[in-house]
Amino acid sequence: MFQIVLALTSNIVKKLKNTWRNVHAGDLLILKSLKDTVSPEKNFLNLRKELGCIVASKGVIPFLALHLSDLIVNAERETFISSKLTSEKNEFDPEKLLNEEQLELQNSGEQLNYNLINLSKFKTISKILKTILRLIDWSRLYDFKVNSDILPKCLYVNSLNEDEMNYCFSQIKHP
Image (cartoon, rainbow, N blue to C red; front, side):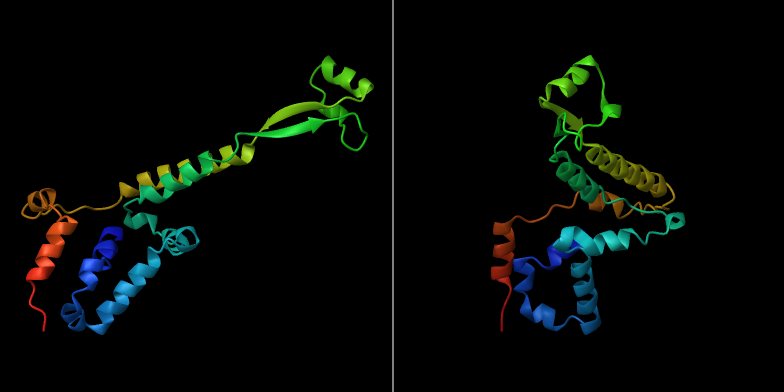
């Protein structure tokens, strides 16, 4: 869907004004709906809503790019959070004592810095990976019907580069 929307909304295709005039209004509404669905606004909110409505029993083709992007963003979060333990009554919790050094700290009134593990980061990683695994599992339910005539053609389709597209566009007769 992403590739179709990107192709149909590319600058060179937008220039085909005569072609666009002949496209049925209902088809243009479908294209607008597809564009809205794959819009990157609000971290792909519309796409995430659609993915939330998946009927697992019908199968699914996972869109891993979205989840890989989430993993990359999450990886940028801090792994450790700095924390300070002091002997002040409102900040010091005797149950948090891990060794005798901390007990001495209580008596001295000094401050000791600790790095705490950012559990939220790891919970997020776990949630994303569970989602990916669930989608991969659901993908086994998707019933692919291979068309032996079309498959070899699709495997060898080449796309035009920008210069080739511009050349083709220049060859089109414009009224």
